[in-house]
Length: 113
Image 1: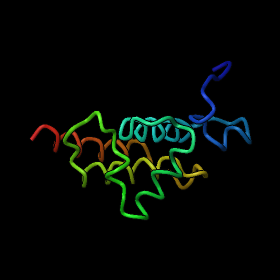
Image 2: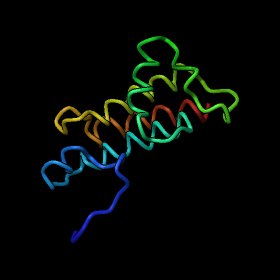
Image 3: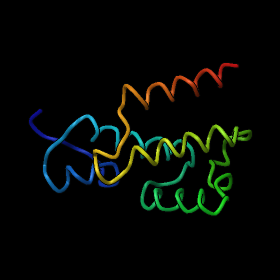
């Protein structure tokens, strides 16, 4: 890779500090994308707002109103996975192949039922 591109809110904070990319840099960006899919909201400050909503028990109010029948428990599980993907330190983020993809497969199976 010769250069990187990206929108500020999607860029791994450790990459911003060190200039070093890794798979977990992509996991960070994926977590932001997941939260945007769930909420339909802009990425700026989204992590904070979703985290607070989970803490306060108001997460269902964060879900994108354009989707009429969110399965709230599954969406909450997905939001927690998303938040783990956007931990500030790479070492605290889940492994893409061992954690993220299996969780996505579980959610896909639930959606197909």
